[in-house]
Amino acid sequence: MESPSIEKKKRLAVLTVPLDLVEEDELEACISSLLADGDRHQIVLMSAWDFVAARGNSAHSIALRTSSLVLTSSKLVVWAARFLRRGDIPRYMPFDFVIRILTILEKKDRSVYLIGGRPDYLQVAASNLRGSFPKLRIVGRCAGYFPQEHEENILLAIKKAAPTLLLAGRGLPGKEQWLLDHRKHLSPGLAMWCGECLEVFSGVKKKMSRRLWSKGLDFLPTLLKKPWRLLRAFVYFWFLILLIVYRIRGL
Image 1 (cartoon, helix red, strand yellow):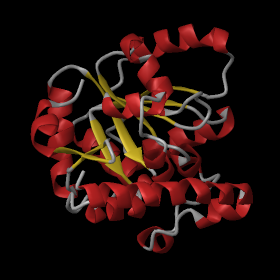
Image 2 (tube, helix red, strand yellow):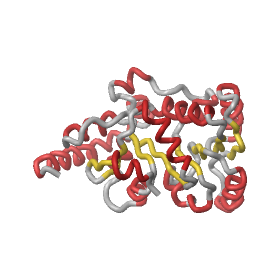
Image 3 (cartoon, helix red, strand yellow):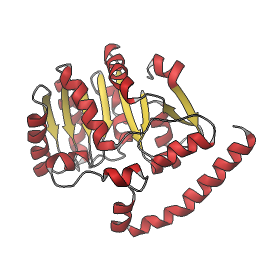
Image 4 (spheres, helix red, strand yellow):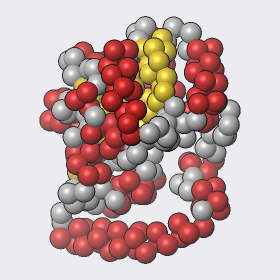
């Protein structure tokens, strides 16, 4: 369920994709509002590829529309909103955004449950988080890449732990979609898929370059490792044409 204040006052659509206008200085109040209503809320920090893939009635687009807070890390999304005269969209660096959420929760003496990643570095990530956020309670952790037959017990363990935030990383099938599919089995609170942040917390991977991110070139390190993603250029070209059509038609 979407937060009423976001839905009525701060949510807009860019190519039918929902985006919330929440500035950094408004984020704490926004999170507090979500926690206050006692409901289940999904937070999405959308990449450029997420945005391009989010149109239509796919499972991913449904996950976005039913999420309580949809923000972006992408300079392309910010540019698209300006091109369509939707205004300036706040942009968040993924790792910094997760740190900000954890800081807000620590101030409120809240809790987090970690799910995803490999068992060895998940344990290190949990230990490092305890050192960085001593007042934030880590009420459980579960490695990703688990067999499907274990899913029911994992969901039960998460529900019993009743975390304020379920922070999910790699190893969940469908990423945000997994959180959405199982939302009814979770206790009230926040849920967010955070990509490689658990690996960064464990020290296995370095966090994204701020310089590349600020220039909108944060995709380059991944592209060097996975050059086949160059094929996505055709999808982005179609996306550009779609933007031009929407601009001409005033949509």
